Image (cartoon, rainbow, N blue to C red; front, top):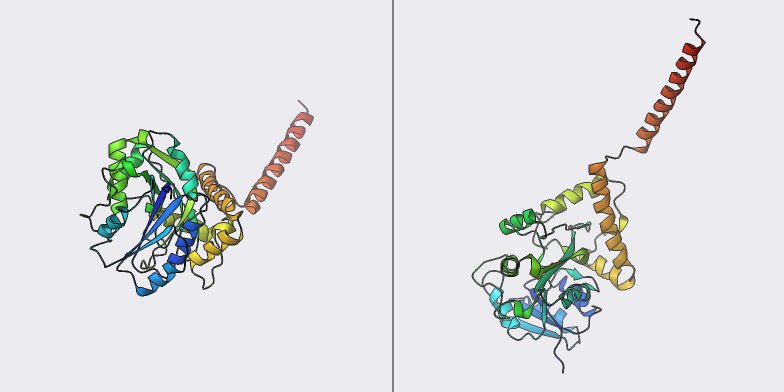
Length: 315
């Protein structure tokens, strides 16, 4: 059996409601040469039941007892058995778009590229999606990134050889291990060894245990302000979920409507362009613009009439 090109690592603790959708999204990738390592970090028994429904030799299940913190030690146990040339991370409550691995993997055709990240569509608790805009090509954004994480871990892909060992998850930190990895890659390889894919390739959902609608993300909170008030917000990014789990809605959409991927990307570009337009050249309501134009036309007629009267005056 040939070695897979991609290793996808999916740790899980307690998301039996969404992990099935996350696994399905990985297995539906256009890039078929992959292995999926599902790492149970003290996972609930029903999680194993969901994983075992997938009769696919590319899936390996690691049912491990709970490790400290976010379970980085368990991730390293699984990674020691990984075989892929390129490593991607998948949360148990996120969804890869079908070409996520293909699009990111293409960036590694350049031998100097050691790691890459794509754009995410962040999804609120009520299903509203909006694009992340982080661009580490800019120095000031790199400075911000050194202080706190602005990129979802699901955006990351790196060469397995980029770290000294495949067991590259930091076990000495309680959380934000993916951020530590990205900072280490950025410091070691610089911007020259990094690539950014400036289109959404996955959906990042607000974690189930977080109460905030925007998961504490200032950018998503700002996007939600627009989505709640703007009549122009695209319907593709504002579905009517009713009582449906957001992951379930988007998984069904991607499964049943292949064209939805491009529609999501187009809608994400539209909201960025519209917000930029409103910032640079504020829009005025159509009714107000019509009234203003009417006043201008009346003023022009008045000026013409006065000018005519002046011309008729007797010197």
